[in-house]
Length: 67
Image (cartoon, rainbow, N blue to C red; front, top):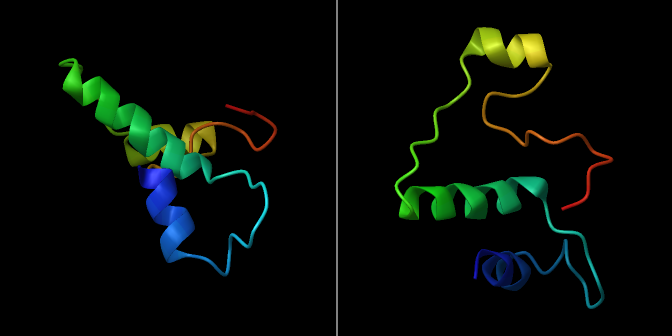
């Protein structure tokens, strides 16, 4: 549903065709699933994010990674 909302509300970024959706969107869906089964997902601390070279908010997978 989140993908459908993104496609519907941001038509300039997604003209008619096949597109890769943002990793952030996929991670948001994954986090929702984890919460539903009772898993508590913690956030990265600024120190952890700096060490890993990531934003504390994600996306957490490298650009070459495909879901």
